[in-house]
Image (cartoon, rainbow, N blue to C red):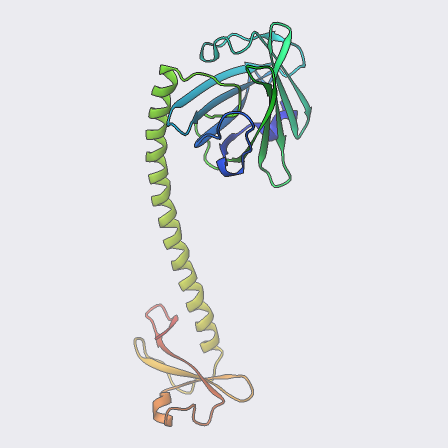
Length: 266
């Protein structure tokens, strides 16, 4: 389903960026949209936690052809009798929920310029007054096997939803721990790569410098800059010049030759 390509992902809620006119913004939430039935339908799955730490779960599928279809989903019992959906364009997807022939909730999904997804819930409260709840999501880099949203008209938590949320929370904690370990390893490798690049740059400078003797592995030497901008490798330390740079323009660094013939600053 090419038109819906931008929406097919797992999305994580930004609670601090949400604006609710009805009910309270949840503590956390995920929202997943999948293509099913060989691209002829979309599957929406929802999982979120409210401020009282209650877990909610809902799931439904719909053919986005603009036509109404019966809405029969156990996790959202009595929520709606019919559903319809349409893909307005590559950046806008709308889902309509009906009770009998009356539309009581419209959910507009929009892909923003920064890559976030804005989900606007336009519905009616129990007293008939209208409300708009706006959610902002960012795309998850690691695709989890579930998703969620939070701004719809209240869907009661089910035992299945609570059990699923606890299991998914435990799974997410474990995978996040493993990802953090990998991240630490990547950061260590990055630091090592930076050190190697630094040694390489220093070594290139020294090998382009004037050297009047054969450096020995493990020995310490001193690099100076001449007035013409070129460099010299010397056996004489700055302290032996009386704390200065002697006949040279300036002292650059004290270095040591390693076994791999790279140089490291001491």
